[in-house]
Length: 219
Ligand code: DC
Image (cartoon, rainbow, N blue to C red):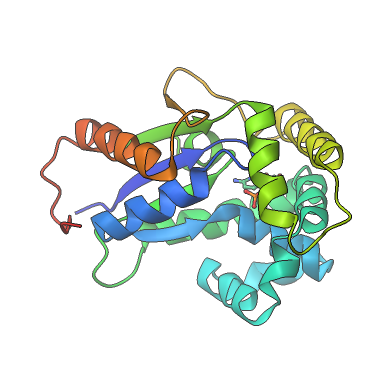
């Protein structure tokens, strides 16, 4: 049977990563953080052609050996957004994602991807597409709270500016921009806890995939 695909797209700090990870756990689907693929290319700052030989899993294992804090940093995120406009980078990373979707791994009946264009450019035929969003200020506050311990000099305004710039870059690039079209179910997490957002996302998936799902395990 063709593996199922769930795509969770949206801007930075919208909560899409938490939602996608928790959905994948609950459904026993494979999970792919597609932003991490762009972050690794940005971090390696290498000829993107080198990545043609890697599978998505290989690229992600680089993530395991690289310092997590650096890969997740705002600076690498901004650089990832810059290199994400390059057609050769998008082509390679899109191919990695499609390979992953086609072969999610032994025991997985499907995959959950999170990113910006996974429901539009990567997997337009996905079984369920959710666009996760939240107010800019709410997203900036989440990011600020997360970073302030380790970066005491960082200001809320800097984070706000950085997110605004990243949103603009991701929405306006010529190839595979982040757009929320009619095929998405929109999930606004501004007022919800992570648990509430995950519960709402699970309900959306349940409706779309016409449950019961083969691999669902109870929490
Ligand atoms: O989700 P993230 O913050 O880790 O993503 C970092 C950057 O990578 C994001 O600003 C743009 C790029 N990206 C992309 O262009 N397409 C994706 N599917 C995922 C991320």
